[in-house]
Every structure is written in C-alpha cells, then in structure tokens.
Amino acid sequence: MPIVTRRAKGNAEVIIDHELCNLCGLCVNVCKGPLYIENDRLQVDQSILFGCIGCGQCAAVCPQKCIVIEGREMSAKDLIDLPPREQRADYEQLQALLLGRRSIRDFKHQEVEAEVIQKILDAVSTAPMGLPPSEVQVLVLQGFDSVKEFASDMVEVFKSKKWLFSPLALGIMRPFIGKEAYDLMKTFAAPLPDLFSEKMAKGEDLLLYGAPLAMYFHASPTSDPLDFAIAGTYAMLAAESLGLGTCMIGTVAPFLKYRNPVSKKYGIPTENNQGIMIIFGYPKYKYTRSIKRSLGGVTYY
Ligand SMILES: Cc1cc2nc3c(=O)[nH]c(=O)nc-3n(C[C@H](O)[C@H](O)[C@H](O)COP(=O)(O)O)c2cc1C
Image (cartoon, rainbow, N blue to C red; front, top):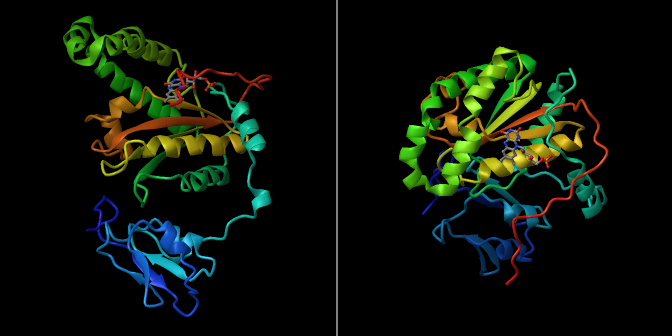
C-alpha cells in the first residue's frame, strides 16, 4: 500500500527503457521495494512492501541511465549528473569548514544577495528526509527590515506567554516535566521574555541579533520529526561555505507551535512539527581560533 504523506498520496511510477537496460541488477540491489528481474526483464510490482516511494535510488545507480521516476514529486528533470569525484570535498576540506564555523551574532551592515540565498536553498534541497518527498518548508526573512519585524513580533508573543514561566505555572508543571526540565525552564527560559523586551525597547535585538537574513525551517506532521533540523544544518554549512556566518535560534520555535499571531502572519501552519530558526549574515568579526568541544558521551558496544 502506498505511504500517504501531505505531499504524496500514491506510488511513483518506475519508467524503464528496456532497450537500454542490460539487466545488470544494480537497481534491484539498491531498491528495497518493488523492483525485481524475471524472465530476463526488469519488473515492477507496486504491491511489494510500500511500492515505489520515489526514493530515486534505482535511477541514480543505473549505469545505463535507463530509469526515470515519475510521481511523488519526482520527474525526469530531477535526475542530474554527479560532479566529478575530484570536485567533491574530502574529509580534510570538510573538517576545515566545520572547524571554521562559529555561532555568529554580530553582522556587517550588508544584505545577503538573492543568489547566495538561492545557493543555500539549493544545498538544503539535497538533504535527506525520513520519507521522500521532503516535507520541509522554509520561511525566508529576507533583509534587515524583515528580520527586525519578525523579531519584534516574536517579542510580543513572548510577552503574552510570560505567565507560562511564572513560579506558580512552573510549580504546577514540575511533576509532569521533571526536575531537569523544570530547572532549565526556571533558570534559562523564565528570564528571557523580560530580557528580550527590555533590550528590544532600547533598539537591541537579542533574539535575532539584527541579522540581515533568517530562515525558519519547519515541516508537516507527516515528516520525520528530525527533517527540519537536518535541513537547517545543511543550510548552516552551505552558508559557511559561502562566507556567511550563522546561528541557530532555538527560542523561537516552541512559541510557533501553538496558536499565535506570528504563525498566522508568516504562514507557518501551527500543526507543523516544531522547527528551527537560523540567522545568517556576513560576520563582523574575524575569528582566529576554533574550539575543540567534547561530546556528552561516546559508548562503543
Ligand atoms: C538547536 C540550537 C539552538 C540554539 N539556540 C540559540 C539561541 O536561541 N540563541 C543563541 O544566541 N544561540 C543559540 N544557539 C547557538 C549555541 O548557543 C551555540 O551553538 C553554542 O554556544 C556553541 O557555539 P558554536 O556554535 O560557536 O560552536 C543554538 C544552537 C543550537 C544547535
């Protein structure tokens, strides 16, 4: 039975050029669904497992380029030639990019060009997702003015929800959320509404740091709950490679999950999974060193 998501309801069609197909079987090996070879012919049986989910693996691996997928938001134009191996980043290059990234909260007074934004979105569209097609949606706040307007709107939302972090409300929540979450809410989240609004009143944006560009990554309830975060991480790294600095902003998303004027104004469906905001801009300061961080733990078994 086909998997039903917001963007895809039925199976994708696997279109095979049997003249070109030499039955090498690579497509069958990578397909964990409807492809098999029988009677010297590549066959498709959409009743196997979920049928064709439009992952594109068969078309991408085929040395003869004789498979095309149509449906579930895929078509022939989505199959593009791979860049040559020598053009792909090796570990040292990737590690250099990763080491060079810092969370940037101070930006030059320079807008981010539309072509650069498009390059970031092109990189994001290569990200994996729980189930194709991607359900990730991106709200692009383009330009200093848009980001500032969003930040001001958001601070109003924080102010209206301030009661959630009052000692009384936190005390009531404590048995349900546990001590660790309670401590985090009390020490980190509770002071934020006042802090943001006091600073905003003085013209200082502590929420989105006066960035020239921000993107909110969110996704429908039929997406994997991690899809938006993976897309956002791709955006950060793509931006880094384009000379931009970035910072993830986690404080925005929890407030967009429930009915509020900001979600409505900016077209963020409240039924969507909670997302992540990322700010972008050309960094004001040049960093001279990276930071080696430790993980919370690594366990081999
Ligand atoms: C999910 C997530 C949410 C974050 N939220 C915020 C935020 O709301 N405000 C902020 O200034 N930084 C935020 N950060 C940035 C972190 O504070 C930063 O990544 C961390 O201090 C490590 O610094 P580095 O990114 O320079 O290595 C967030 C980072 C992540 C990954």
